[in-house]
Amino acid sequence: MIYPAENLTMKDGRQCTIRSVEPEDAPRMTRYMKIMLGETPFLLRTPEEFNVTEEREAEILAGRRDDPRSLMLVAEVDGEIAACADVQSHGAQSRRFHRAELGISVRKDYWRLGIGSAMMERLIAFARQAAFEQIELTVESKNYRALPLYHKYGFVIYGTRPHGLKYPDGSYDNDYLMIKML
Ligand SMILES: CC(C)(COP(=O)(O)OP(=O)(O)OC[C@H]1O[C@@H](n2cnc3c(N)ncnc32)[C@H](O)[C@@H]1OP(=O)(O)O)[C@@H](O)C(=O)NCCC(=O)NCCS
Image 1 (spheres, protein in one colour):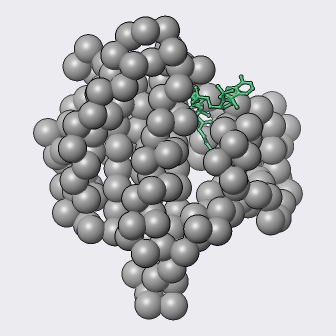
Image 2 (image 1 turned 30 degrees about the vertical axis):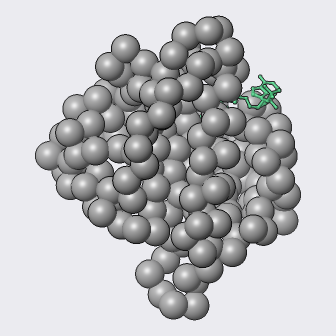
């Protein structure tokens, strides 16, 4: 799905552009993923586990742009990607047609500037418009930045998966399963 570019004034007064992703973003996107994955322990992959080539990334981004029931937004600052967030169908099957899945990440340099909230608002509006009936996500129980963001936008915890992630020191985090009914 294509979302036209829109300017957002961040909480520090600087500008960023929120727009849907393009296949031409592939080099920027792979750079973004490598950096962003190194800035948080709360996502599934480590930076070393992100091995998507720019060519493959361009194909993936084209698929997201061309899918009317998927929206992948980026926030761009000074020509680089500062954040990425998406909503897509939970699966291709007709019995899961009503379920959407949401993911979001922001580069550390841009945390607490309102980008996450701006993206959540746009994705929730898109999900309604695309006839989804519920948005689902998984978040780590210790992710004290993401949990308030999700609560702010009406997501509630409906389950806990023990030991969803295991870290190199042998410790675990539990997954919270969250849902927002539209
Ligand atoms: C979670 C994340 C997306 C938030 O993005 P953000 O752009 O910083 O969010 P915002 O500036 O819009 O803040 C949104 C709300 O989150 C909450 N929040 C964010 N950081 C917080 C913190 N350190 N402590 C308490 N609340 C926090 C607040 O409720 C805030 O709303 P407010 O500013 O109106 O009080 C960002 O921190 C991030 O990308 N983290 C790493 C990746 C990640 O964890 N992704 C989610 C995986 S499930």
